[in-house]
Amino acid sequence: MPPISKRTALPPASLKRGLSRCIGRSRGGLTTKLQVVCDGKGRPRLLHLSEGQTNDHKTAAAVIEDLPAANTLLADRAYSSAAFRQALVERGITPCIPPHAKHRAQHSYDPVLYRQRHRIENMFARLKDWRRIHTRYDRCAHTFLSAIAFAAAFILWINES
Image 1 (cartoon, one colour):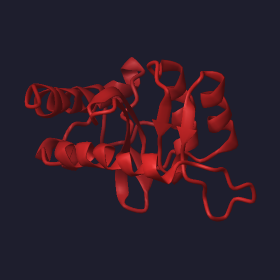
Image 2: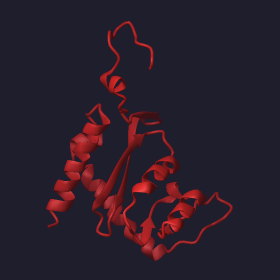
Image 3: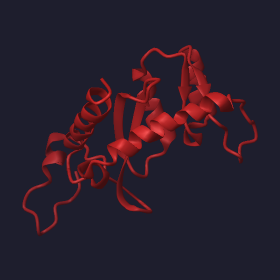
């Protein structure tokens, strides 16, 4: 538990309950990363929050256990690692991830299929239209994640029906 300063008499409630705020320090200040697993239409199926400075490889390892059944997984270059690709292949999922230019071993991917990733980016753009989500007013991670889930359900599920 971090030391309590003279200005506060009690530790933060989230530390008392053992809940993480998922707020991390990065170049942009205090930030949070949102990882989303979407279906073929760009609708979110799985939401995961992490601190802003956390590497995408670590969060991918946490999310891979909860992945729904799928044939192919589209991801950006940040998820291009041999361990993540191997874990996907073991689950029977074909990875479509472009390799980093700096990597020695260049993996092949389908650029035509990768163009469908714009649906995921469009989903993020529609979520960020909600002011509460793009500015993160909530201190607690569970409150912020519930706001994201509500916005995703409203925008991406109800409006497309």
